[in-house]
Image: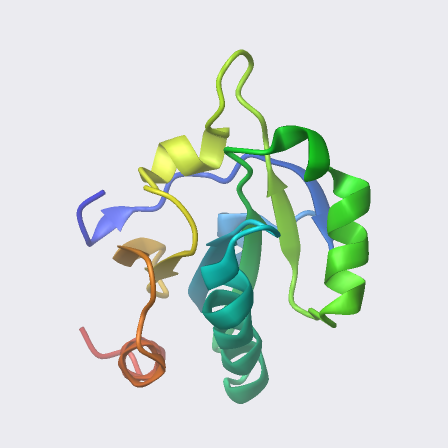
Length: 157
């Protein structure tokens, strides 16, 4: 997905750590950092989720919203909602996390398809207007991500 394109809606079957489902419309006006992960992904556990936690802890929540998206495209039988709930508790993840909705008859879930995500971990950053400014598969350097978020939160292009 090219940068500065409007972000597609999320297709989430269940939310954790939020009293109501999150929508892009409700988050408009904030920079949104979407971390796509799987519980059994080593890069997600060692880098992606700690980065999401640091981002959630460091930036003012009025300016930056961190959202996790559990995008299961392999090992479907063992990565269910009950297992994810335990995982969230054990890793003390406090930011909202949604389960990417399964696509009937397909391995790749709907939001993963809509964003053209290549795998996990992936990071998608949306500006305050809901435009995709970064869509990256793999490890993103903490400083580079922080600089982009800071620039977008300050309203810079």
